[in-house]
Each structure stands twice: as structure tokens, then as C-alpha cells.
Image (cartoon, rainbow, N blue to C red; front, top):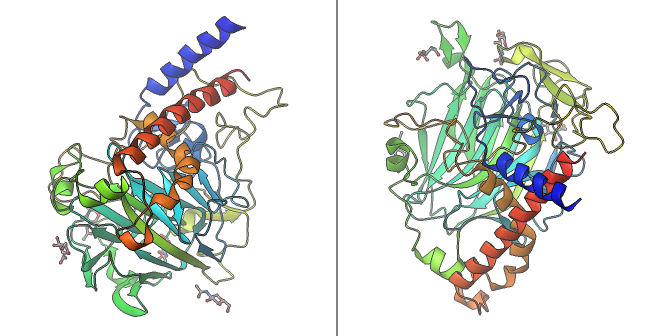
Length: 449
Ligand SMILES: *[C@@H]1O[C@H](CO)[C@@H](O)[C@H](O)[C@H]1NC(C)=O
Ligand SMILES: *[C@@H]1O[C@H](CO)[C@@H](O)[C@H](O)[C@H]1NC(C)=O
Ligand SMILES: *[C@@H]1O[C@H](CO)[C@@H](O)[C@H](O)[C@H]1NC(C)=O
Ligand SMILES: *[C@@H]1O[C@H](CO)[C@@H](O)[C@H](O)[C@H]1NC(C)=O
């Protein structure tokens, strides 16, 4: 018994250290790791959930069906419906937000945090919007190299963005992408009062005909579908597929990023800045998000079924199916074509691949698809390094949450901080080590099935 646990631990360590095969439109995932994650790597389990790109996966049905839109206002007064991506298996009835990184609740807001040696935090909605309206009320982070984002991102990488660079607190940058095809001329700025000190409500109103970006109810930008025709490809280069809402804080100014991204972000992140010394991390403060699903009785844009799937690799709006396929995996060894794999009582579960990765990780690049002009060789598929560390970091939320009382948020009068930032950081590192062990044990448990 003991030696088999040791062997399993060694095997699990190897699993964590293995780097997943990469995937793209021209290189689909192999059958044993069929799912291509948002970051362009192949795996099983969470690789097949939100962000799994059906065009780059082994088959169109490798990805798990995506939960349809739910109209709802999310107030961030607890972590109850925020689930780590190392635990979420696709049940959107129990989880509103899937977390990669460390989010903490503070005064009825959720803080997305970014401590030194982390790549920040990403919250992705568990449900998908196929057109509709979404509003988020938040305060951005600050300082050069630190990027706050509120975006819609579909599994085929249609994208509608608000992005904020910490070096310029008076600007909301808007952007959009069709199927992740880079275009550096789609950005438009909206001028605002200080985005770190003031809450603003950022809104995306998305219909089959146009996208409107509004801030505090004022139209800042309108994009008409009719202006997006590409006569070379004979396509509307217009966002048109079901997308998750993603809230994120990430280090654009990381040395491993492309130079274009670093320059765009305002330079390298200064990890000794005041937010780090007083709190232990950079943070963005999200107060609420409201999703209002699109109203229509015929496609595109319906949300009457259980889930969205694609019936063609073209990945356009007419290839989206609003149907009744289930969305929940039995375990992290499951895939879209074997959703019951690893079920406790299962008799015919396929043996997990010895090298399959189960939770995709980020490396500090844009959680969306947009790289920036001047980047060379950097792409969203460069996520290999640090993926296991990133995914295990997600488990630290509970303990981080318990240190909320010491968070000062730049307001000395509200804080009774007795711990230095460094001490808090030390505490967090211990949590991370503990959770990494828990992650290994979880992998062992899965492998023992
Ligand atoms: C859909 O209809 C409901 C009820 O009329 C309305 O409250 C909601 O704002 C509409 N949603 C959108 C995105 O237009
Ligand atoms: C938008 O603002 C950013 C940051 O200040 C700046 O780098 C960029 O050039 C601006 N883009 C446009 C299109 O004006
Ligand atoms: C949906 O796809 C069809 C076929 O490509 C296209 O004709 C139509 O314009 C698309 N609608 C939108 C809103 O993009
Ligand atoms: C049309 O699509 C092609 C292929 O994606 C792209 O290279 C080109 O820049 C697009 N043209 C326009 C005007 O968007």
C-alpha cells in the first residue's frame, strides 16, 4: 500500500511536470489528450471545459457542451459561488465564477489579486452569453505593467474587450476580435475619471447587428457588423459566438511576454510598488456584474436549451447549436466524448493517460487572445511553463479570505493591519505549498480509480 502511494506520488509529480502538447488550427490535439484549452494546450478534464476550442481539439465533440446564458446579477459578498478551476467540473447551477488565481472578498467586493511570482487572477463566468448585455462595476488596479480586464471571450476566440493599463488610469481601452485573428487597428479609447479611485460601470451591449460599449450609461463606442465584412475571406469579422464573461488582473509587464505587450502595458511590473508593500499584492475591485441574456425566439442568440455546442469547425454563428446536451464531467479525467470517465461507481471508465494534464494554466500572457503589435513569437499558446503552479495557486482562496481583515486597500483609516505585506505573503506561500500537495493528492486519487 505504502509503496504504491509513493509510486503514485512520483507518477503524479511527473504528470504535473509534463508539458502538454500544443494545439492550433493546423495542429489539432491527439486522441488521448483531445481538448485544446484557451491557452493552446491539449489535455483532459478542465481542458475540455470553458475555453476549450472545438476547432483545435481532436473532434468537435471533444469539448464539453457550454452552459447556456442565465440572466443574473452577481454581487460579490461571498466566495460561495466562486469555485477554483481545480475543482469545477461544469455544473453552472452551483458555481457562478470559475477562479484561476486568488480572489478574496473584501467589503462586498471581490478583489482580484496579483502577488509577486504569480500571474494574477482570472474569474470566468460559468455560463455563456450569445449576444445580450453585460455590465460590470469595478475599480481597476494601478501601476505600470499591471492590466485589468473585463472581456467577453468565446471558445472560438471571438472577443469583446475593455482593458486598462495601470500606467494610464484615465482610459478604458476597447477592442474586439473575430476568431482571435490579430488586428492591431481595432482599438478605441474612452476617456474617464481615475479608474483606480472611482467605480465606473462598464457595459457591453451585444446584438447580431452591433456592439455598443457604454461607460456609466454613456455610449463610448459603437461597432456595426455591417462595417466588418472581409471581402477576401467573405466573412463578417464580427464577434458572433457564445462567450464567457472574464474578469482578470494580469501582468502585461512580465519579461516573458512579447515586447509589444510589455510596451503596451507601460513597462515591466514593479513588484516593489506601494500596493505590494502595503497589501502584498496588486488588486482590482469588482463590485457587481449583471448579465442580461439576449431575447430572441430563433437563432442566432437563443438560450432556451441547456448548452451550446458547435456542429461545424467554421465556428460562425450559424454553426452554434443551442441544445440539451449535459455540461458536467464526472471527474477530471473526463472529456466531451467520455463525460462519465472516472465516475466512482463507473465500470467502463477509460484508464487515464499517464501524461494527461487536467487543469490548464496561464503563464502571464493575456487571458484573452489579443497580443500586441511588436510581439514576436509570443502567443496565447505559450502557456507551458508554470501551469501546474498556477492551477494549484487557485486553492489558496479560503485562507487568503481569512486574512481579509488585514487588507488596507490604500486607506490607512479602514485598516487595522498588524501584518506586514511580506508576512502576509509568507502566509500565502505556505498556503500554496499546502495546496500543491493537495493537488498532487487529488491527482493520485483520480489515478487510483
Ligand atoms: C430581455 O427582455 C427582458 C424582459 O422584457 C428585459 O428585461 C431585458 O432587458 C431584455 N434583455 C436584453 C439583453 O435586451
Ligand atoms: C489608447 O490609450 C493607450 C494608453 O494610454 C495608448 O497607448 C494607445 O495608443 C491609445 N490608443 C488609441 C487608439 O488611441
Ligand atoms: C451568421 O452566420 C451567417 C453565415 O456565415 C452569416 O450570413 C450571418 O451574417 C451571421 N450573422 C452574424 C450576426 O454574424
Ligand atoms: C481578412 O481576413 C484575412 C484572413 O484572416 C486577414 O489576413 C485580412 O487582414 C482581413 N482583411 C480585413 C480587411 O480585415
